[in-house]
Image (cartoon, rainbow, N blue to C red; front, side):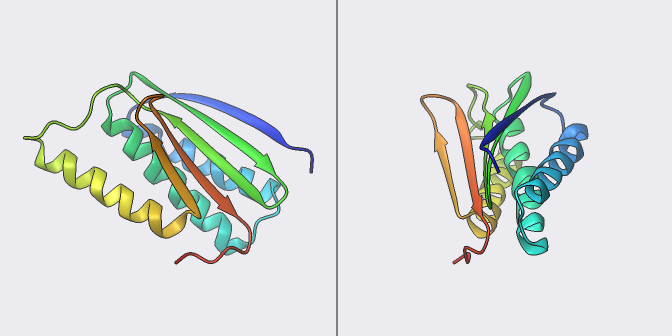
Amino acid sequence: MQESKVDLSVPAEPAYARSVRMMAANLAVVCGMSVDDVEDVRMAAEEGFVYACGTRPVACDVTFSLADGSMDVSFSLGTSGVDADDVEGREAVHYAELLLSAVCDDYEIDDAAHVLTLSKCTGVAND
């Protein structure tokens, strides 16, 4: 497979999580991932989107970078962090980070560039 990119821009609202999740799962199949890896990508994409929405962007730009057996997914983040008094928001972000660490091979939050990047490769065991 030739490396390729797919861009998606959606309003940063919970109603659009399914669209992001389904696109990610479909593209994982295109990359030749196993059923288990497709499920991990699907879950990671949804949690990445939830995390991005928590940073309050107007829209979330999602870039899927595809190669044989691997995918990176980048989410644009807003410039707002979770308020210190927003207990529910802090819990949601913490929960998203726990899930991302469980289903991704790697994830990185670049606060300066306002980007969350997730990585998944076929056959790589999660610790």
